[in-house]
Length: 380
Ligand code: SF4
Ligand code: SF4
Image 1 (spheres, rainbow, N blue to C red):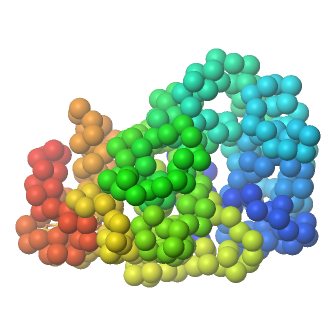
Image 2: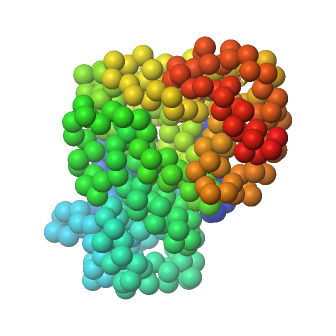
């Protein structure tokens, strides 16, 4: 298992993580074993947005004797009222629900204290001026939560969170279909009809990912498989099925992303996700799938897939393109990006314009011309 630093938190999280939402579907003992199996495969981050006692008890039991081997994303504002999940900012419910999380997990701290999801600007404004956010800061100041995170499905909220400065990481919904959708405050609409919206990666999302990387705000990924629809040709908005490995690779190649949290019912599904670590470049290749899809629309946009390798002068084309996009989005290139770019072994000015890469790029990116622009931008 490879581990990545989760933004400002400094935590080294496994590239493949565990989204806990399906734990309650099974007998308690089975789910406890599933979590232990995941740990044995190197997975060290688990999301617990669920407020129900069963899911929380399962995680608590799985972590008995090995609490320090797990990083927990624990949600503040996910409450359980009359046997139902309710997202709430009402402290009458929020405080006991979070205390219940600590009790059931048999712990006195949560690594990543998540502001349970905010998708609308109105709610963001309300929450940022409320007793709720004061509680989050109190928990952080007292060390009960080690880091402050947020979950959202809306890149506009993600950008506000990055700008807020105190949010160290974000759990965000990322997959090739969502990436084409304009920002919305209604997550349910993300699963609707895609026919009229296949017009390339949404600029708000591109900018959000860039801001995360520039500001060292780590990303963990939810809904990486689009609720399973992208694994099924009939339901996929692209008209083709992807494999789990391809979708994990897509998410892990977005700027700022550290871990993809998948849901699992069985040990076999864990194996299928973890085999990403051993997968060949061909097996990870989501780019050909998108490019050959009847409904693809990424033409001309670099998806950082690396399909254009090899370059005769050994330029890491995907990385150069990523730094170019990050820098070109700003009025002036941020110093951190310039330094990262200059640290590359080979830079754009070494391009000999052979265009071999362009013949291999499934998205028709005009790489040679971009290399000229990149060399001008960075002066090297
Ligand atoms: S230039 Fe094309 S092949 Fe190369 S990383 Fe970008 S999208 Fe992929
Ligand atoms: S055009 Fe430039 S970047 Fe592309 S393969 Fe040739 S030398 Fe490498």
